[in-house]
Image (cartoon, rainbow, N blue to C red; front, top):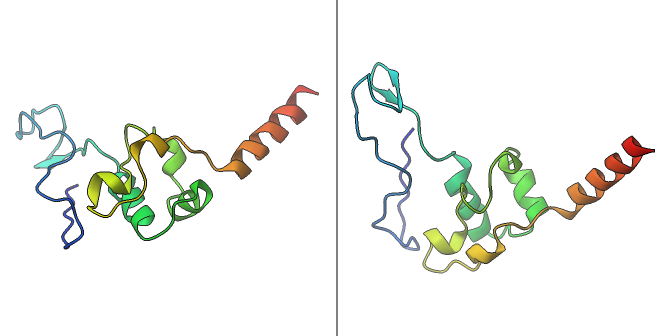
Length: 114
């Protein structure tokens, strides 16, 4: 799919993702009838929007974007600093994990191994 973002706070003039070399049905990203597979997940820009609106805690982001943990948060998803002129979340903070998930994973692992 294709998405557009418009607004005064955007650091605009950029195209994110990969533009297909071949737009025909024989192209690498084609699924036929003119439809192309996107190279970025929908969550890529929505994580940045959520952060820009104040959801900066990893647990809050996981709640707002339930599929977020299916992606490499440093390479597949944007932080608000990449899309907005007034972004506060730096790319160096991309790998933060929700602490309740860490606790749950540790508890599950401990239960499994005993």
